[in-house]
Image (cartoon, rainbow, N blue to C red; front, side, top):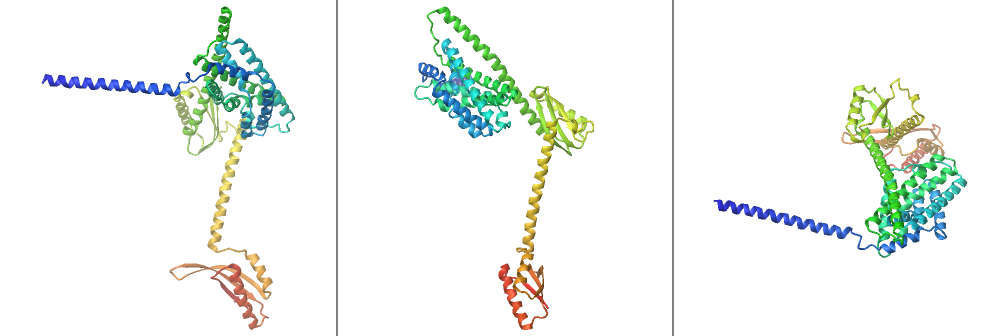
Length: 477
């Protein structure tokens, strides 16, 4: 009996050992698969990449003219709020060279390339802003379009586009063989061109908040593009530039590392801040849609402010009890991203909160929402009326204009004195039918023979004119 138990124990132990070995083998194969799939170190041409980056840094001749033309196209797109035109400008824009050069030179401690990159970056920014300012100065359209307004402050989407666009570009540049730099540069232009054009718009129209906000957005995007280049270059092990003077090399490395840290820390802080702001606004919108409900009321407008940590909801209808608002505030505190937020409910029928005390922007928004809703209600009613009239017309059989028909009848038959029209509904208790019925009063001076002829012709004419098989005509003299 003991031997049987020992045998079973040994069998289970053996099975467990086999399972562990199989799991280990699967893990090793998966690691090998993903390593071969995602590893780019073997296919990286470091020397050619550095040469290509250094070649793209310079801004003169053809590159300068291409930049000028692309900035003009992008400015036109922003001016008329055409996304398609802005994208077209990005396809021909050579903006990525100096910024990628900054990231690469810091990663490999190349001081000379770093200086060239900064100089050409300044030239690029100056040329772009001057070109955009000239366009917006002479442009007759001075309106603040949505495309321009969207480029006055960085959002988490702008930062993500800059990061992943920069990563895609530098990874593509490190690959051996042909590199589609122009196509991959579209992602870079997405983050850089519109802000520079918006800076020009702000300077040309003396709107300094536009200019400063757009310049700030450009700077943030440029930093993240350079940072992406720096990180990839370090991960791929690009060789450091060697100097004859070891002390100079060490000092250069220290300066480069310090610059990288100085740039990286504020960038990470800003990224986290923008991410929290985006999450706050998203959660606030979701909370309002799912939780702010009360019978007999309607939400007119809702706004959220990350800086002041407030959520304002404007409602109209029945007065909402304080206990309900307290419950909403408690639910708000249960959401991690909104636990510090304050819910402020503005009620339209609350005399202590007169609508005239609201800001102009909010009042205009509320009135606009009411106007749009009323217009939708009226349009729906108009469509229903048209549908009902159409159905009623089918029921009546009104496929003609009685006024026009009576005028034609008088012209063709001058002896008619009066004509009337109605729908006669008849039934034989098996089916119901609607028969168009005309009552015609003729001139009593007309002879009997001629009257019979006129009545017969009139009946034939009516059947052809109205295209009806069933028709009733009552003649009166």
